[in-house]
Image 1 (cartoon, rainbow, N blue to C red):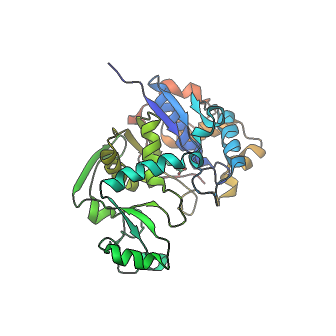
Image 2 (tube, rainbow, N blue to C red):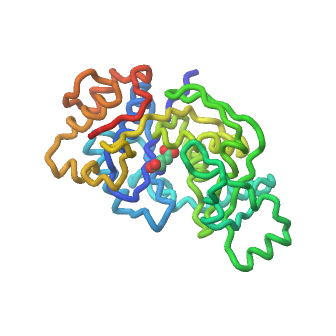
Image 3 (cartoon, rainbow, N blue to C red):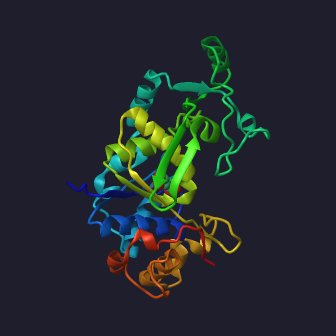
Length: 310
Ligand code: GLU
């Protein structure tokens, strides 16, 4: 029996959606819809300092404006589709990992972590040195008197390989190339790596389409899925949209956010046409609706390299 595809939009409501976020949502939507699948909307608002409910509402409005609908979740689905309301679940799964002896407290400061000698992961962040891995219970108690620790997972020293639907085969040595990820920050906020694994599994997501910047997080997520007894979704890591200076589009590129784009009077069909042309789905940049792209969608047409949009 063929399994129905369940994809998702997983935006972080820390600002207005920009063209890069719209690109991820469009491709996640097309991939699911072209296979007759479903889409879930989950607001990834774990970080209370950065995320706001108004931004989540605006994201929903912008998705609707773009013609991208969803079958489950978002504000219609209730609090369960906001990560900020799912802390108890993350706590429970963290406990499962802890019972397996995989969790340890880390007292390192930001400065410790950025020590110049540390090797770096593919995305440029330092691989954790493992400095707190071997602390004795006594040392842990001593340090906890002056500093609240983060919690890290102890990855095994082994190879992990997988095939990304767009980028192809990927292989890493978990301990050497990725290191031990933080699963709960020192301020008590659960980390993205844990939350995304728990949520994708509990929400039945079996296809993840997201920016190539998250390819380096995938080995951790695959390993956590194994440890928690979850099945692996299929992953497709799509190119990033870059601004003219070669930097990844971000919330700082104000003119690329949907608020500015909509205020300039551009139609949603023009925005979708631009994104579809950038992706390699249509040969000429012309207005098109998201729904009109469904029959044209094919992963084999998609560009793998990052795309400059201005
Ligand atoms: N919330 C993340 C973001 O907006 C996406 C996470 C994911 O797709 O796994 O960048």
